[in-house]
Length: 102
Image 1 (cartoon, rainbow, N blue to C red):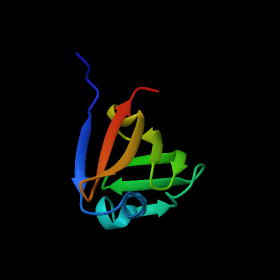
Image 2 (tube, rainbow, N blue to C red):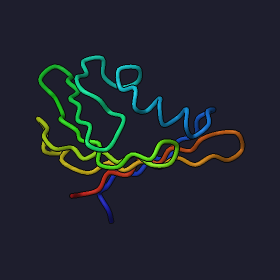
Image 3 (tube, rainbow, N blue to C red):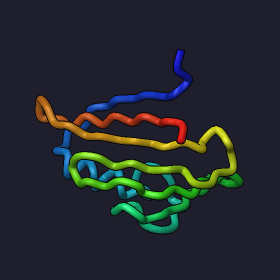
């Protein structure tokens, strides 16, 4: 049995809108955000009190794929690769998040 987390959600937006919303970290995840999260090579840091993660964007294809690698984190649990893809059907975008071991 895999211990990797896998989640798929549907949103009422096209894949390009969805991609740009995911890259706007302060609007949906952490207001304590530093850096950029748009293109491959960008790095950003999110903080929640003592907890933090330094994340690198390793792949970026707007409207199609976004892959993050968690480079440094307060909790070893978060040292993994997060890959996300979007696809459109039935007027919604489907976001699939898959953490993977490096």
